[in-house]
Image (cartoon, rainbow, N blue to C red; front, side, top):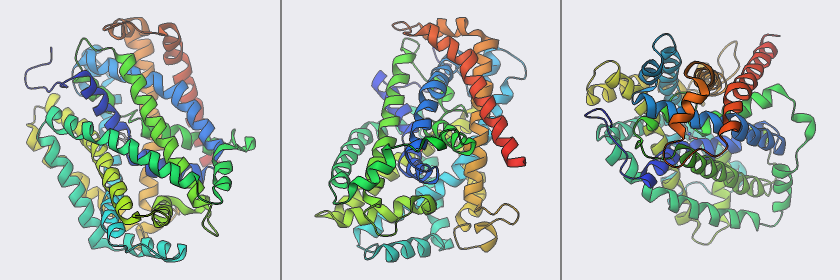
Length: 453
Ligand code: PFF
């Protein structure tokens, strides 16, 4: 049983929905198409899928097992299973939670504004006008900082209410509605005249790019980010999981849902994008979906309402992810440091807000943060690269070594076999002991070498 005062998921479906709610978010609908655009299309998609199934799915199972056995925050769970320095892997994850939340809440703020903009028809007209509108909006510092505050305050308010009531209820309503809306948008995008060009870009890989280290590293980082892995979010959610539940089954649901939503987002963005004259996905960056989607809505009857409904869903999907990002450091301060939930949430939300300001300013409001001297990147892009492409995979590397070799795969399998067995146990144990650590170590090594060289 859980320690007194710790939450528990209300039902099996509740847990799967909550974990899927953490996974499905801006990473799928905003991040994935952006990265596909930067990575040159279908080649990125292919590498991404390999990363998801070979590296990330086994780590998802491992994180859930660690959480349910340890029954604490990420650092505390590792410590409970094997006392010593392994808890540092959890501590890295806790820092990553705050780091990621600091830029994630800025983008979530943009989606809130776009509810209003699409509803009122403010983003309309030529592709240039839509692009200029986006550029003007994100450079408006008071507005974007204010919206970031709204996101963090909402997140904090929900998780002060505790795990079960806050997270589970919200995701239950969201997931089916989001999927339905994505299917409708996909149908619209794929039937636009000229949609074939985008489809070819998205589905026909340029095989020369498959061995490009920067693309592989970006795909790995994106896979970790999208599945909420490498920072202990799934350890934390696993720690609230019923002891009788089957972990592999829950993990399979999360992987399938998360990957489907990301792939659907690509099927929406690229066919529609390529119908816009002069469209270049490789240079669109974080503004990609905000440039393409309003154009897509404009081709639909009742497009304003559709657009507003879409951005409402996207905001809700983002909030179920910000909740999990904030829940990780919160659970650490409660479980390992003895803080009250309220103290922990308010302090962390405050710190994150301060850290989010440079990310909000780096989109035109401040020349310094928009292109950092010596780095040549916006602060937000730098944060996303450091945390997603390095901190999360390194956390995943630490975790796979811990589960495969320190806790040991055969011990972990005892936890995994509860509640209906573990199909593919032998395969999982090979992946977690050999494939995950080796693949991540090699990718990080060559990426760092390329960066330095
Ligand atoms: N998986 C979320 C998304 O794709 O939007 C982002 C995220 C949430 C990353 C929670 C990491 C995390 F722990």
